[in-house]
Amino acid sequence: MGWFCGNFENCFRKGVPQKSKMNYSEFISLLEKKGLPNSVFFCGSEDFLIEDCLQRITHTVDPATRDFNFDVYYGSQVDGGKIVDTASAYPMLAESRLVIVKEVNKLSGAGLEALAKYLERPSSTTRLVLIAEKITARNKSWTKIKSNTCFVEFKQLYDNQVMSWMKQYLRGRGYEITSDASILVHSRVGNNLRAIANELNKILLNLNGEKRIAAEDVQRVVGLSRTFSVFHLTDAIGNREIENALQIMSKMLDSGESHTGMLAMITRHFVSLLVIKGAVRQKKSDNEIAALAGIAPYFVKKNKTMAAKYSFRLFENVFVCLLETDLKLKTSQQPPKIALQTMLVQILQQD
Image (cartoon, rainbow, N blue to C red; front, side, top):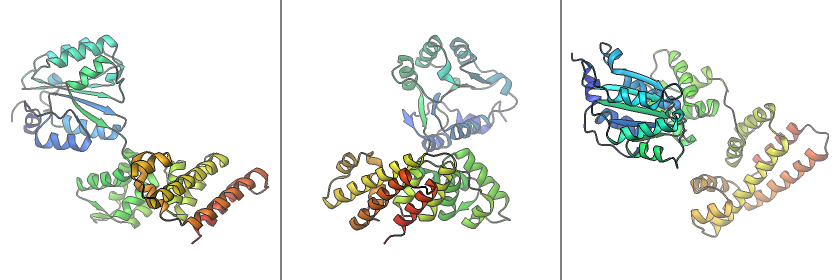
C-alpha cells in the first residue's frame, strides 16, 4: 500500500475536467468516475449533503499520513494567509494534501483576496475544498473564487426531489422503499434530509430482515413531527385531500397560526386556481398563466392539476363558504378552529 489509500490516489488524480457549476448528484458522479477536482467550492444551506460529500472525500485519506497532509480550517478562526501557506506547502510522504476550509464566507476581505489570488495558480499537489452557506454575488473576490473552482451548489431540495433522494439514500444501503412509504415519510417529517435520514435509519432497524420499506413500516416507527406552513395546507386543499388538510390545519392552529391570516391565504389560493382554470379554457400558455395568476412558472403545472379538480360551479360554492367563514370569524361566538375546520369539510366534500 502507498502513502495514500488506493481510492484516495484515484480520487485525487490530476487533470480532472471541471464543470463550472453542478449539483450534489453531479458532483458525486464526478467524484466516483473521474476523481476530485483541484479546487472545489461547496455553497448552500443543505448541510447534510455537504457533510456527505466531505465524508466521501476524507474517509479515504490514509491514516498513516493524515496528520501531515490533512488540514481543516474555519474562516471565522483563521486568516487567508494561513490557508494559502498550507495549500502552497508540498505534501509529506504522499502525492497530495487535502485542505478543507469551512465558513469561508467569514474570512476577512483581505483573506478572500489572498485566497482568490492563490486560486489563479493553485498548487497541483493540493486539493482545496471551500465551504460557505452563502456568498455576496457582487464581491470581486467571490467572482474570482467561483470562476477558478468547481462550484457545487447545495440548495434545499424541492418536495418532488425529496422522494427521489430517499430512494437514492436507501439504494446505497441495499434497501428499497415503496412510493406510498416515501410519500408518508415526507408528509410526516418534511424536507429536512438529516431528520429524514434519522427516521429511515430507525425504520431499517425494525425491518426484521426485510429489504423493502412499506407504508406500514413508516406508520409503525415514524411520528408526526413535520412543521407545516400555509403552503402545505393550500396544496392539500387544492388536491382535495381532506384528511391531510384537516391534520395540517389543526397542527398549524395549535401552534399559533393566525385564523384570519390562514383564511386569507386559502382565499388567495382559490382565486389563483379560478384564474388558472379560466386561462386554461382560453388556451393560454404556461407563461401567460403564471403572469395572470401571479405565481412562478415552476408552479403552473401543479396548480393546473389542482384547478382541474374544481368545476366552475364548485368554485362558486367555495367562495360562498369562504365568505360565510370570514363573517363567522368576525361576529360569531363559535371557536375559530371549529369554523375553519367546518369550512374545510364543506369545501372538500362537495362534488
